[in-house]
Length: 225
Image (cartoon, rainbow, N blue to C red; front, side):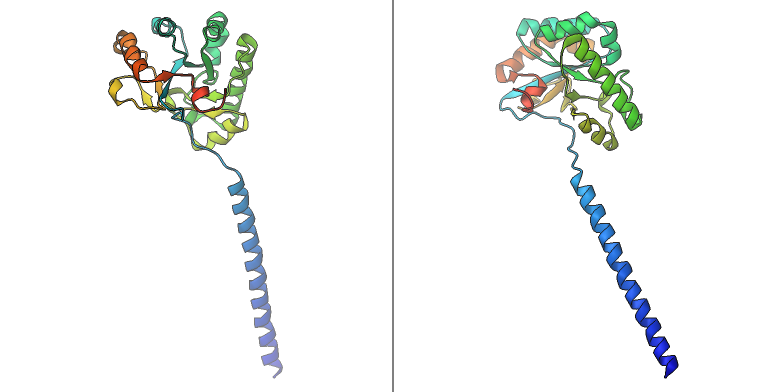
């Protein structure tokens, strides 16, 4: 009888300990799930939501004849675009950055050295965005809130860092204007600075202007007035 009582007590202890372990494990998993659910990170923006409106984005990492042509063409057609600048370029071209803003264009952040962002550590991404942000603010007065990684290369691990800094990541819905009839409302188009695209730039933008209104990205995603 005494052996049976000890054996029964032993099994009761095992069952009780198993139940406690199960409860604790369940609580840990529940808390972890709640914590992960609370951190909501949106996807990169690649379209606007303003009806019959499209946006142009330009990557600026160096001076070039194509950059001058883009700026002059946009002036000629009275189109405002979003220029994503690298901090390195702004540091060497203060006056050019100022003129972009004076001409009514929006500036976006492309990091300082425009590295392939998908290969950078989170702290390095934060440093590059912050350094470029402060430099552009000092030079032009612009308080940027849009970020676009070089060549569209990005990683999901970098999105929380970017959003913590008050930025929204933008990637183009289309690279270049090869066939203007395929373009639809809301598109964010990266102008490619190739010889062919530059040669047809005025014609393509003139045709698109007959179908759409152009606006900087910050306006078509309803982040600015």
